[in-house]
Amino acid sequence: MTFHLFGNILTSYGTAANNRGENEGNITTLQKLLWKGEVHTTVSAEAIRWALRYYWQTAGGDYAVNRCWDDQKNDNVLQGSFDETTYIDDDVLGYMKAEGAKQEFSDEEKKGKGKKAKGTNLARRGVLEVTRAVSTIPYAGDITFNSASGQKGRTSLYGTEVHATRYQYGFALTPNRLKETSRIIPVLDGLVSLGEVAGNHARFLYDFSPESLVLRWTQDFSPRILYCFQENEDGEISLPSLIHRVEVGDIEATELWVAGAIAKTPEGDRLEELGANVLAGTKVALSTLKQRIADDLQLPQLEGVS
Image (cartoon, rainbow, N blue to C red):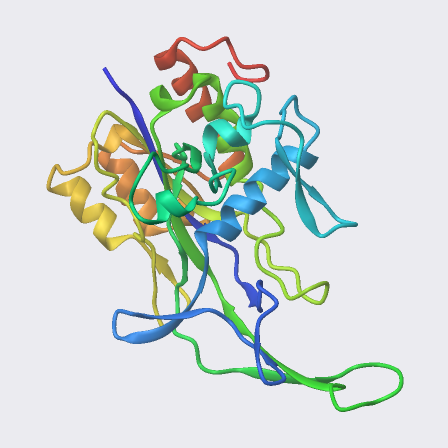
C-alpha cells in the first residue's frame, strides 16, 4: 500500500520582479510563457527548490543540509560527499555529480584501439517533484523605471518588469522513495513557509507562503489537482475543475485538505459538503494532515498535534 502526497499552492497577491539577475539591455526581465493563449509570468521549479533547501538551512530544525548557501560567496557550499542518508536535501531533492575521465585519451584510444578511460556519474533522482509557478492572471507589460543613487553614469538608469499577481504551483512526493520516510514532514513544513523565492536582488520581496492550498493524501498515482485555482477579472479565486472532479468521482473528497482564504467562499463550502477537510487556517490544516500522514506511515507521534 503506497501513499502519495500531492499539493497545489496559491501564493498571496504581490508584485513580482526578476529572480534571476538577467536583463535585456537595461531592463531586468521576468520569465514568461504562453499559458492558455496569453502571456503569463512564471517562477522556475529550481527557484522553489532552492528556497526549500534554504528554509531547512535557516529554520533552526534538526535538518542536516549538504548544499548550504553562503551569503558571502553568493554560492552553495557542499558540507560533505553526497549522502541521502545523512542530508535531507540529498534525499528529497536529489543530486548529480558528473566527472570526466581522469586522463586524456591515448593515441591508440583515439584510433579506437584499447580500453578507453571513462568518466563517472554519481546521481540520485529527486523524490520531490515541483512544477513551475505560473501567474494566475496574464502579464500586462508593466515596467518601472529607476535611477541608481549617487554619481550618475551610463548604467544609472534602468527598468524593471513587474507583475502584480498571485502564483500557483504544484508538487508531488512518494514518501516510500525517501531514505527516511519521516522527511515528508519537513517537506510540508518548508513548502508552507517559503519566503525568498522571487525577487530582484534586495529591492523586492515576494511572499511565497500559501494564501490558499489544496493537499491530497492518496494511493492514487495521479495528482489530478495541479493548477486547479482560477482567478477572474474581479480577482475572485475559484476551484471549478477540482469541484467537478470530486463530484464525478475522479477524486475522493476525504483525501483532500483545502485551506486558507478559499475555505471561506462558496467553493470551500461546496467541497466541505462533498466531504473534503476544509479549514480556514493553512497551519491548522497542515497539522491535521501531518498527523494523518504520521498515523498511516506509522511515524512517531508529532508534538503539538492531538
